[in-house]
Image 1 (spheres, rainbow, N blue to C red):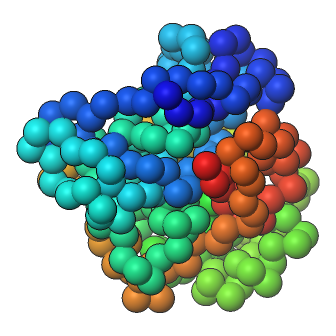
Image 2 (image 1 turned 180 degrees about the horizontal axis):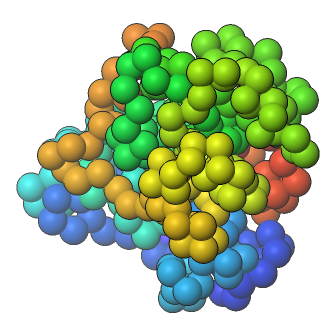
Amino acid sequence: MSTAITFSAYGAPDVLQLSALATPEPGPGQVRIRVRAASVNPLDMKIRSGLMAGKVPAHFPVIPGLDAAGVVDAVGEGAEAAVGDEVLGATAGGSYREYALLDRAVAKPAALSWEVAASLVTVGRTAFRVLGEVGVPAGGTLLIHGAAGSVGVIAVQLAVARGITVIGTVGEHDDERLTALGATAVRYGDGWPERVRAAAPQGVDSVLDASGAGVLADSVALTGDAARVVTIADLSAAQHGVRFSAGAADRAGDPLPELVRMVADGKLTVPVWRTYPLAEAARAHTDLEAHRNRGKAVLLP
């Protein structure tokens, strides 16, 4: 037996409970890790609250969490890692637990802390994927809503590295942090389209919405074409003719190994805001839903 966070009904953060469960066994191609860090993602909270029930139906009890980093302690037949390896990846069956399963383990360089390793997986893959979908070439201008958020920060850095001019909407405390990453910061809130036009007189080629803050109609007006706007956070996308981007990279095109190398080489930063003991997962959800964080929240089993 081992411990895990579970919930057996949709609701507020207090539905998250520390439970004793059977330790999972790896199947073919899988590895089991002793989890050293598990990141908290916005999707975790949407699933827990029931907001995603129509798209991600729950089979209670649910173990939340997408990403983890840890030490391999058991391997399934054909697995591409060995006992004792330090790895990271997306979990099969949840990450808020002492022992988790990975379908595909990516080696963790010594230069990456456990917290950063766990924090990179979903946000890195998402940022990489959606930048490919917006398709802004070098020299073009990209507006990123929620640029100081976990996906936004990665997308900003990847876009700047590709020679793209980035305008990012942020809150009052994030201007300097975004500017340090090579983007132009613009305050969100009433009047943001005018502020973006002033910051980008050359116009905006495409928009990536990572905020879900009701900005799609104005973003379409700003670009003049709904096909040039992509959101990963606003479920009303179809009402505006905007593409909602969701999904994961396949094995052949998985960018995670490249992203890991970039972080290890100091070419990509993954901000970690705070760590919590596993038993305080509910407090982590409460803090993130109150928008207290400035970076990733991480659970330490």
